[in-house]
Picture 1 (tube, rainbow, N blue to C red):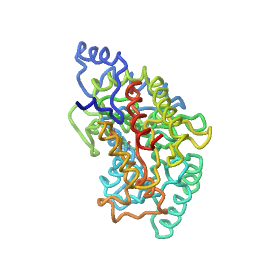
Picture 2: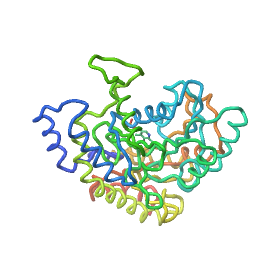
Picture 3: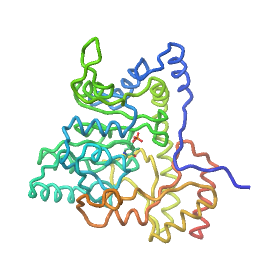
Picture 4: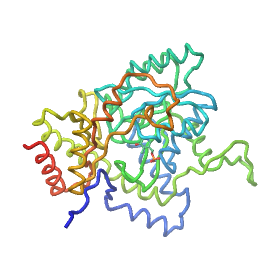
Length: 376
Ligand SMILES: *Cc1c(COP(=O)(O)O)cnc(C)c1O
């Protein structure tokens, strides 16, 4: 008989979520607005500190789309984006008829390489194209090299749209991820560190910008008794039911970060004994990852596949790293700057079970596969 499936990262309720959802039912706030939405936003603002404003939206993808609109990205514009990421970082560029310009990773954090970034900006400017925005990503919760990236962005006066979908709870130089961008984005999809089933948020540094995002996310209705529109709107606001789940999840966010970091420590101890394997780990104490997913680099594509299949046989889910966007058929014509770092990571990398709800017996099964595979 097959054992129960161990997931890469599955929803983990804290216990109070249903109370907030019931409140929404009891008061009939079953709508894309209401007290849970407002309170969830306040909870996030208090958590992130840095005097930010948070607008709760229907998804991280919606937040990225509205973020690009607020940064005035238009058809024909170019937007710089980390290549090694989930497709949702780049798709909204295409929604707007703009062109993504993809940037390779560096080996320390696996995120946007500042050297390749500067090369790209110089080259695009020399071709008469001033990039409209830069989208760095904190992959698997690992903060990108934000000092270097921000210095370049400032030098060339290009705004940053920070994709912090995987990094709520991570910090860089003691500042929370999700507060570094001119605009930042969070996701509460089912597999993220906290979830609202589906949902996302935009983080801004002015109330005006947040209000503009909320305005666009609720069909851009002008201030009139009838329905009047001077701009194209979207139906991107978070529902009060989902926000109720989010309020409950905020109560366990710190706990979830600690549990995911404990999973990473578990993998640290195993792989410190295996020379063939490199675990993605903070390069120094400036970086503090929520370790949303623990990920390793093996010696070859063949070894990576063999290990993935060994886990699959035991009904344990693992996943290759994100396939870089510049290698995706849909983006094959987009410009790319860098070497083969992200390609190499994709070939040899594997994400391991990392949920905050992993049990001791789950970890024992995972350990068993690794021990058998490496003949420890
Ligand atoms: C999950 C994710 C998104 C998209 O968020 P959704 O809420 O699923 O739309 C964007 N970027 C990255 C890096 C993600 O991991």
